[in-house]
Image (cartoon, rainbow, N blue to C red; front, side):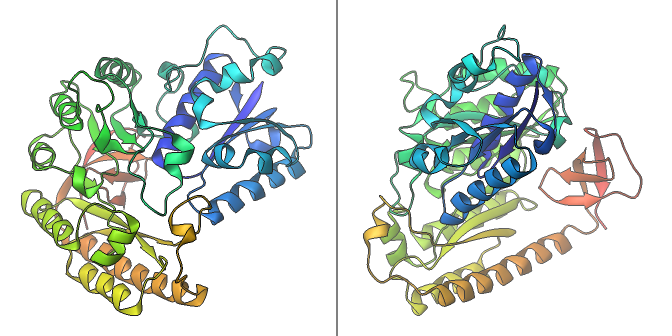
Length: 411
């Protein structure tokens, strides 16, 4: 059987898709383009209305180009609005996040005629040995250590679509990392829906700090890149571990979401702009060459011009290196969707553009600051580019094999 996996959204979805793909290949399935596949799995996001629309458009496009294909839809949109997806052409199954970890088991009866069922998918981490570096364009391995969230930010639907926080035991994570490194991966991205809550549900004393400490001490030549951390979860201990261990990438992603404390309060974000500034400045002091990214939301209900300008002012003073800017999107069922003071679309677009310009300036400034330095980098794509430990993608003057460590001098 020929298959394709299409992924929308966050790194957790990327990790889930990688696990699904590993299990499909272990059962004998062969990767193909969507227009040639017998089965297409669409792993959806639902963080914005645009993400929902993108998934629907993709499914319709697949059905037009491949009328006989079976489409299985999973992810956050499939969990939030399954009926909207069941009505789309060629959709045979809609699988919620709650049973995504056994997606192949859930559709097994319809697969029996075309694919071996000797290997069962489970625990959110399919047989990683089936996926060597380079498959489907992936050089780094994305490892999910936690899913679910209980923070309940007022704008976010993810606690509803992902459920309560659930962590994988440290022993299981260590086992999978051992397998992934043995398969040839040299970089592993560690991710979760609310990564900072890792271990709280296990009852064995595990925390994100104990996990990061274990990674910092790993004895194989592998780089661990810690995915997005909420500001309140990025402790001094974690910053020190990243600063001191060559196993941990000097790269931190800290969602700010807004620069005005009143908006942060309405968002139910448990920190202040001053606390965020201090954290970023400490990271920059301890890790001078670190890449520090952030997420921002523009047009949150009730956002005044003065509050937006507070975000602009804060960003211009912060030593960040890149921004992801999102227009506010109503998600029915969230607290924010019932708030008054909705910002007009034209104002949201203008504010988003202004922050993206600041983000562009940040990225350019950071790249210029790295000129003349030598950074460890992993070759990707066709071997003519590489990604440095501090998250710069650079072109190479000569080709190298993919998935090779090099020392890259930055022009």
